[in-house]
Each structure stands twice: as C-alpha cells, then as structure tokens.
Image (cartoon, rainbow over all chains, first blue to last red; front, side, top):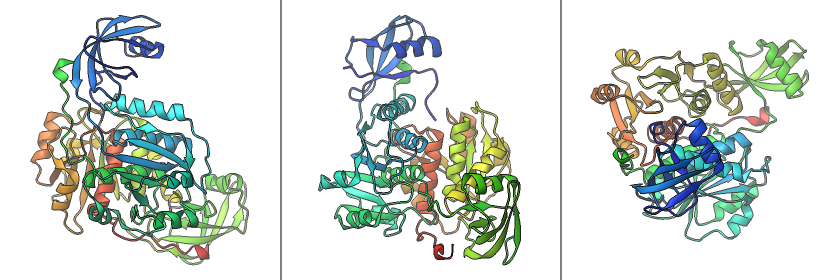
Amino acid sequence: MPPSREHIRIYIDAPLSPGAQIALSREQAHYLRNVMRRSAGGTIGLFNGRDGEWRASLTELGKQHALATLDGQIQAQRGTPDLWLICALIKRARLETIAEKAAELGVREIHPVITEYTNAPRMNTDRLAAITIEAAEQCGLVSIPKLYEPEKLHALLDKWPPERRVLFCDEAGAGGAALARLQAAATPQAPWAVLIGPEGGFSPAERDRLLAMPQTLAVSLGPRILRADTAAIAALGLWQSVCGDWNNAPVAIDRTAV
Amino acid sequence: MPPSREHIRIYIDAPLSPGAQIALSREQAHYLRNVMRRSAGGTIGLFNGRDGEWRASLTELGKQHALATLDGQIQAQRGTPDLWLICALIKRARLETIAEKAAELGVREIHPVITEYTNAPRMNTDRLAAITIEAAEQCGLVSIPKLYEPEKLHALLDKWPPERRVLFCDEAGAGGAALARLQAAATPQAPWAVLIGPEGGFSPAERDRLLAMPQTLAVSLGPRILRADTAAIAALGLWQSVCGDWNNAPVAIDRTAV
C-alpha cells in the first residue's frame, strides 16, 4: 500500500540541506523523464537515509542528467528500532523477498549467513541493496537497512555482541510459543536480532551452539512449517509488535508541501 | 524451510483410505518420473485436504500415467483456526505471494475483493489455487485454503456473518497498536477475518462502513507504510500468535514410516 503515485521519491547518497543542488544519476534522469514523464520544474522527494526527506525542484532534466534543488524538508529523519535480521542464504527470489520486506519492516541491519545446510551459496549484494532502496522509495521510508556481505554463521556468532538478544525461530521446536516468550523477554530499547535458517533448518551442531548462547530466545512459529521468507516476515512483524515501534502512530508527512 | 527433499507430497482430490488405488494425473506422473526421477516401487505422500496424509507406493509409473496404492496414514488430518483472509486484488506477483503465504499461515478461506481503489481488477483463480496447493505440498500441510472468486467488497460486507470479527489493517491510522488491540479483543475459538486493502488504501466510504461495523477491530501495523503482501503476512502471523494455533507445538509427522 505505497503512497500516491503522484509523489516520486528518490534515494540519493549525498548530504541534503536547504538550497543544495543535487545531481541525479543518468538512470534516475531516465526514470523521471521517460518512465514517470516528468519535466523540468516538477518536484520530487529526495532522501539519503540520514537527513529525512526533502522536497526538491527539478531545475534541469535532460536525457543524460538531472539537477534537483532542495526546497525544504517534508519528513524528519527517524530511526528504526535496533533490530538485525540474520538470514541464511536461500534461493534468489525468496532472498529478494526477504530483503524487500526487511526494509518495509524497519530492520536496521541485514546479515546474510552461510550455514551448514545452505544450498544456495551465492548472493548478488548490489541487486539486494537496490531492492531495499526501491522498497524505501516506494513505501515512504527514510531509513534503509544496511546490507552486509554473507559470512559463515559460526563466524558471526564468534563475534556476537554480548548485549544483543537473538530471536531464534527454531522449526525443530525447542522454543515455546513466540508471542508469550517474546513478551516475557522484552525489555525497552534492547537490541535484538531475528534469526531465520535455510531450507532444511539448522544442523544439530548449529542448534546446540545457538541454544547454549545466553542471548538466545528460541521460539516456535506455530504448528505448520513455514518457508524462510514467510518465517522472516512473520517474525519481524511479531518483534515490531512486541518490542519495536508498532505501538506508534503512522508517520506524519507534510504532503500539502509536495 | 520445507521438509527434506526426500519426501514427495502430492495433493489429490480423491478419498484416501487403506488399500485405495489412486490414479495420478499426467502432470503428476511427469513430475515424479522426469523431474523427481522416481520409479515404480517408490513411495510418496498423498493428501486431499480432508483425510490427513498417507504413505503410498507407486505401483505403476509410466510416461502418461501413475498409480499409487495407499499403505497407511502418516499424518492425521488437522484443522486450521477459523480465519479468513479478505484481500483486495493487487498486482499479479504480489497476489501470488499472498496466496502462497495464506496457505502456509493456515488461512481457511481466501476472499479476494474488488474495492473502489482497486486498479488490478483481474485474477487467475486457477493459478492462485495451484499456488496454494504447491505451498501445501512443499510445506507438509494437510489443509489448503478455499479460494473464492473475486467479488466487490461491498457485496461481501452485505452478507457478512454477524459473529465473524474483522481485523481491519487500516493504514489511515484509525486503529491503535495491533498487538494490544488484538489481545484485548481475543476470545477463544471466535471466527475472524484479516482485511488487507489495495495500493492506495480504502476509500472514505469504505472506511466509514468498515469502522461502523460492530465486528470491526481497526488496528495499525506500525509507523511505516507496508505493501499489501507484507501487511497480509505480518497480520496473519500476528493473528495466529494471539488468537490462533501458534501456541501449539509443531505437527508430528511419522517420517520413519516414509
């Protein structure tokens, strides 16, 4: 349910401040001119993940380049809860779904991991990053998850931050019901990670290690086996409901200024 | 996280009982023989959505046909909570995601609806039904959601069952936090529906009608705008956590018999 089609939002990795002139990329110029049929003089929204969203006037819009001048901020920067997603590499389409949904669901960092049962060891980092940016552009977000390169699960656990809890979605059923366990464990502002395994789940050695970590909260996501993307989305939504920012009202955006 | 690749499960619309001989379709024969490289004498699982899952021996497996003989039940039939999903028609790929995830998340009936802001009025019912069956086959389910033909939202509401509550995921923000409101409203065994709107949300007239219904529980799914498929999956997971069967342990399947 993205916002109205009228308002185009573009991510740009540049500082945003009043009066700043921003050069858009060739692809962005093409998109604005040929796909969205905009012309010079039109307005768009720009955000960089740090400085909120700004209304910008298209002062130049050619075939190869575009220049936007910032008018004013229309959405303040707002952070997301301190939530990571640790997800095993899975088949391309489902990993892309996870990246898109992680952005929509306010994940701060995405750490893809290689586990013992991982059978899809490759990942296109640039493509996944572009998917998180597109989700942010289309859904009115001002934050984009930081996407890490894949690493081995054991390597990530070797340096695991002592204070960060792990919501271990364990299809082998070690945990109790996710909602009750999460509500009992929730503490304000605590950093968390949601951990989702590959097709086939975790190996016995991986499970033993995870269950022995004091940070781990093992939970069950119900009596049916879920695909990894389904489990990720459901667990992230549940975490935001219990520990995150889903108690807040929808973000206010000054659309009258757009 | 589907079960092991070794165990092939096939949905068949036929009564299942001890010793029954089941003729599989030409497509199923092709799948078993050429895709999964099975041969006569092998075993598969069969389910029909009513009689649990049965171990079956492939007594014949030709290019055009296959015959399976039922040996014994390996998973009892189990129902799903009385949960409907009412979802506005949206673009094909996202509607397919919703159908797949509705099956995994234990939805009993899917009612696609046409709303005032619906801008993707077509739906391939056969294809969506096949997607729910495939999800059930791959995820070890014995129940498949009943998929209805699309109808107008107002027509569905005209005949709305008085006892069925509606979890109205309202991006316009009439509702409070989903978790708190749902926990306050939950009553054992009550029938519910999760309602997800189209891109652009509901019209003012639709919202007024929904908010005036005594069955409606309007909730917010947090401060970020979610795409319809994300909202559907997160809301279904939250409902199963609070009102549904996610307090139960994972289903027991006797794999030693397979």
